[in-house]
Image (cartoon, rainbow, N blue to C red; front, side, top):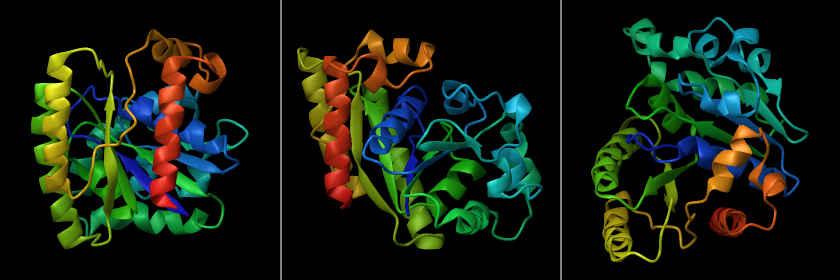
Length: 254
């Protein structure tokens, strides 16, 4: 079982979209997937049409009032979901003073270790206890970003976070790569920022994925329709971008 965290401490970088791309794309290869939503906005949960009001959530899991098998719901034939809720905003306060609270999720995953091929964790745009749990529990990290100036700042902060996690709770944590989304290859600015991102990747001891996801309205339309991009726009250029990223990621990991 491979555990993947999708994270970036900067907001608006496409973490949920990347989580969905990976879940649907890897599931198409016949793999069984569990998506764990740790973002209080619960966008991954909403995208799978799972209302948190009807479910126990990762809030109950991380506060010790439910087990992981108890909160998992079925999303598609090959994808299960551990949904999130706005209650996660209280998590840091409730876990303050607990012994080794960053290991809660890692310990919880033992209950499903023989059930899934991949676990993909969607995280909030911050450094909080949910993110620390995700990084401590994971084998590898995918960092979605955009070709803009502010993304460079976010990656510098993430580099410090990952190094701290590797020192304290997960020395084997690996960063698979930086994924550039909403990419426009026609602008000089985009090319310049991409070059800077490639340099920044060195601080994370990783690389920028060769595959880049162009900006396309089909991504938002597929989410609005509660459909996989592979079903909504199977022959679209952006879908080919996403498939190329999935293939590149799987080649790196295998």
